[in-house]
Image 1: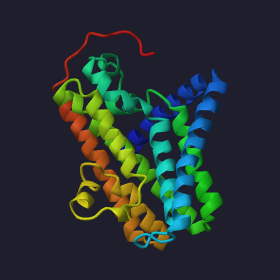
Image 2: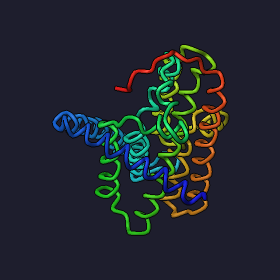
Image 3: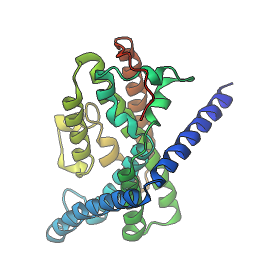
Image 4: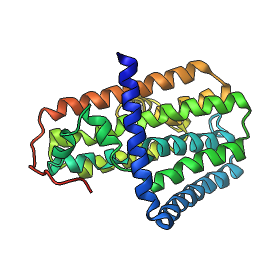
Amino acid sequence: MWFSKILSYLRLARAYIKLNWSMQMEYRGAFISQALAMFLNNGTWLAFWMLFFSRFPVIKGWEQSDVVTLWAISAAGFGLGNAFCWNLHNLAAMVSRGELDVWMLYPRALIPHLALGKMSATAIGDFAFGYFIYIVMVRPDLQHFLLFNLLVVAVALVFIGFNLWRGSLAFYFGQAEVLSEQWFFAMITFSTYPNCLFDGWMKVVLYTLIPAGFISGLPVEALRDFDFSAAAFTWLGALGVLASGAASFELGLRRYQSGNLLGMRS
């Protein structure tokens, strides 16, 4: 029973991805330019870190290769989690405006439809950038590359769960778009800075309220030391963030007030 249900949702995901991809390809030039712009933007930030480490080769045990790995796992995971699930980025606004009505009419669970409803070209640029710098600059062997792929999926789940967290704020606080965006920017910032820079209570925050530690800490440790325990904790954290995000959404949905918007999604 559970296996057939998983296959059913995989077919649903494939259908959404195929549809959204075909829509993006109608404006191929815009799609390529947006993805390339994000690729170059990430490259600019990484260049800053390269200049920094050229002056200070080691910071609390972190070397230049660790920061490259951090940016690779963060960009690739963000890209995978948002390229095909970009609709969650607008969840707070949809809840505030009562725009979930149409999505609630679809068969199967609500979250997969919401998540897969839109695609992001810029996130494709993030995904490509992550893999490019990891392959070209880190030059991993086959074992490290396979582990990298597993961790990218885990990081993607962290971002999806986190987007459910912040989007669900609107169920409880009404007009929560600004708060949701600020929380998002905090997550992006802390997920691109070396985890070693933070100690004490801030470390606790990075594994709870802003779960960037499952991006900027454990995955880098797993790849640097080929540590399966760190990889396992990354996956446990990712599943925890995803589950709590889904639970927050489902609980908040009970408070949802319809906007009586039955128009088709754009």
